[in-house]
Structures are given as structure tokens and as C-alpha cells.
Image (tube, rainbow, N blue to C red):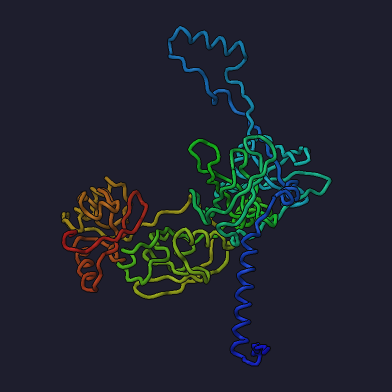
Length: 491
């Protein structure tokens, strides 16, 4: 019997390479299958390891009795004397009373520094920290930051405390497992697990950078940690979105990269020290970008430059901040965070787009906390219309600013521009929020003192092929840019 043999042909380099590629592909598929199954069967080991660092926080506050609810009795009612006698008999009246509240926190050092939410301890007269072991210690406030709702506390103890470290929240990906710990609804130490549902959420604060999670977070969880599977804190549980006050799977934790910077400053100075540029800004929209000849919709449009670091460096209203300290600026929110996270007193290079080209400014940052609330509103330069006149342009009825209007609008003597007397409700200007009483101080990034100058700006924009004109509008001293289309029906 003849036996047929089939050679393996190892001497064929092309076929050998094909075999190796096939084996590699199978190996990669196998590895992906294993990774897909690499989820924890239990969080018990993680919870056992990190629980001792999580604390419950009880606060108490003395408030006047009159601030609480009391029976509503109409004046002159026959029951008025009855309720007054009842309160006096029970020694109530205006006698102060003590109220308490519950929250969560976590230890970040063996010598007793504790992180929680500012709203957990705000106005508290006494703060008690309860540890996982049952031990209770009084805490004092080292510093608070209402803008990020973070507070740093300190307890005194002779024994080193178990603590946890901050992780890098920027590495947290949507879909990653996370574990929340705290004191929900005052029930004591509790663990819940979920995933990162979304990143970079903003609620209402200037420096918001929240991680959204579906891990159960309830009242009392405020200030507690959100852990990754390495036992690192990637967030501080702060808020929930709920129609009934309970968890519906939409919770928010302030990202650890924000918290750690705040905590470091509170620990070192007892307060925050954020950089301050000294500008008022708004986002760049498509029509604004077209009006000023900007290639892309990005950056932060400067609407006003009060006295401060940016003014000293030569920044002007109408500039678009494109990069700050070597990093591109996506929008106003991003710029505010970049500036706030930069060291006070640092000299930074800021690239601005001005009149069709870029320009680099070197600016030494001030401190936001010092400047906040004391920023003067800059007004345009001098100049006055020679004669009162009215004209309808861009859907607006406009009048040059005169002494009578200056008094009615309570404007400074140096203010100039065109006053909006009326706005057509069918116009684009009305849709973009312009109203009677607004003052237009610039058009095409040039100051206005007369209607003739506005007509010149419109003609120049059309000649340059622009589809819209950028106006600087002030209302009650607050400036903003509005881009209006130059089509015939809008004039």
C-alpha cells in the first residue's frame, strides 16, 4: 500500500509568516476574551482594605428658635394667646436650639487630615468624626473651598490612622468600575458599586469637573470617597440628580485631580490661591468666528478687560484667547479652569487672535480671591454724538448716547455708543437677547460714537465679504459680544 505524505513546507517563508500571523491573531482574540471576563466576582477584599479610612461625620449647630417652623396663627385670632402661653410654658420663645446633620468623609494622612464636602460642615459649631472602629474624635476645620464644595478637617490622635491616597481621575474611563462608600441616610458605613457613567460633568460651579456614576449615592453620602478598583480615591461624592431625594443612578463626584489641588492649598495655606487673568469672556460661536475671520470655533472671546494683569499686558476687548501657558483653549470653561489651576504670580504666555492675526502676550497672573468682587467695570473712551437722531439698523432702533439718555441709563460720563431704543421681535437681534436700553459700544471691534460710524462698519464688513458684524453690547455695565447677520432683511 502506498502512503502519501504531505510535506509541511517549513522552508516556505511566506507560508511560515502566514502561520505566525494567524497564531498571533488567535492569541489576541483569546486575550481580549479573558480581559472581557476580568471583572471582580466580589468587592469584599477591596471594601475590607479601604473601609477603615472612611469616616462618618456628625455636625451640630446652634440656631435661634425663631428660624424653625412654628404654627401659623392669624393676628387677632382667639388662638393667638393660647399658642403664646403654650410656648412660654414650655420655655420656647426665642431660646436657641441645637440641630444636627450627617455626612461622610475619608482620611488622607496618618496624622489625621480628613476630606469632606463643605456643605457637610458649613456653619457647624461642633464636628464629630466616627471611625470604622467605632472611635469618635472631635475635628477642627483647616480650610474650606465653597467653589468646589471641599473642606479639609483635622483630628488629633496619638495613633497613626489608616488612610487612602488620591488617584488620577483623568485616567478614569466611562465604563470603569467604581465603589462609593459613606453614611447614606445615617445608616452607618455602607458600600455601593457601579460604573463611571460620564466624565467632565458641570453642575453650577466655575471649577466643576464631576464624574457621573450609577453607584448608589444618597443623602449622607456627601463628602465620601469614590474609589477605583486599586483602592485610590478618584472622586468625592457631592450631589445626586433625583426627583424624590433618593438615588436613581445619577450621582456626581468631584474629580480627584480637582480635589487634590484644593486640599494641598488648604493644607499649606488654610485657603485657596487661584490664578487670575483679569478678563471677562464668552464662548466663541460660529457667527462670531465668521464675523472676526477666525478659522475655527474655539477659544475664549474677551468682552472686557478691567484693571488687572491682562490689561497691564495689553490685552483688548475683542481678542480671542487661543492658547494659555502652552495649552490650547477650547472654550471659556476650559480657560477658567486652566487659569485657576495655575500658580499665582507665574508669568505665562497667552496667544490671542486680533484683527486677523495672532499675537503673544506675557502676563503675570494675580490672585483670584483678592480680585474677586472688586473688579471695576471698564467703560469705553470719551466722545459724544453731536446731534440726536434715530435710525433702524440690524433690526434695532438706535440713538446716539446723549446726556438725557446717560442719566436715564445711569451711565458714567466717559461712556459712549448707541442706545437701543427698540428691538423688532422678528429680528435676529431679539432672538439673541438684545433689548431696549442696551448700549452698543463697539462694532467690528472699533468704538462707536455715531450712527454714521455704525453704517461705515456695516459697509466695511460687506466689502470684506463678511456675513455678520460683531457688536459689543453692555447692559447694566456687563459686556457681551453679539454677532448679527448683514442680510438685507435684517437691516
